[in-house]
Image 1: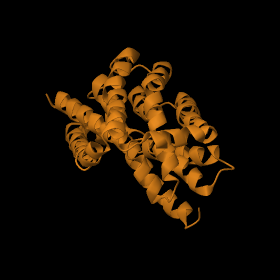
Image 2: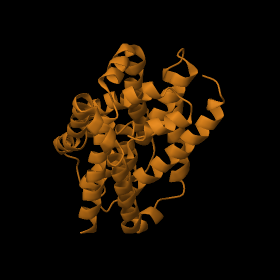
Image 3: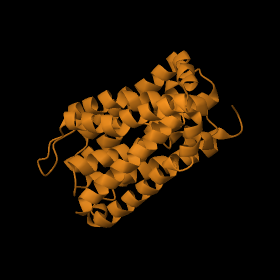
Length: 280
């Protein structure tokens, strides 16, 4: 019963967050993102190729339990959370670029996230195998459709969008917090079972995500580099948790995604303070 409640809470929260992303994004912002094709392409490669590939190779070389590897790979394959632009703003990054990248990545993840997981995910300790088509279906429901409806409302009825934006994302955020709290309570034994040696690895991988984003935009303005660094680090925890709760309930994969996400947010804030420094 608890597992079903967590899954439904997270799913509804993700739908509301993605609906808010669509309503908060104008077609002019998407056009601006397309005009920055080179920078957007490098952002896509950083999130869907470099980051998951390197993390996969690192995990391949380490003797970790399969479910820990699953939790880490779920985060590696689910890039750019809906809340990433807020962290980009905190790091004094290029928010317009961050928003454009987030929308592009959210749309591409419907195809690319299941593909990455299908290729890179090991079999669970309990013998559970991922169904990529189920993930595609889930992503269509929780990301593609809500974003598309939100974009349509923003284009056709911007006054509705402005009103809905005052409540919809907040409800989604509250729902996500409730889902995470339920997860913490129900998975407390699994969280305590995580080896202390796993935490330094998660810190290093989170730092690698930041470095990858910054490095991939070498030659661009400092604020755009910060935007991609933070966007690459802030993985899509709502999506990763939704996949974990659907496919790997009662395994350590779920708390691993949560711990990883907290570390990426902490490091992103520190990175923003160190690199923001007032320079653009």
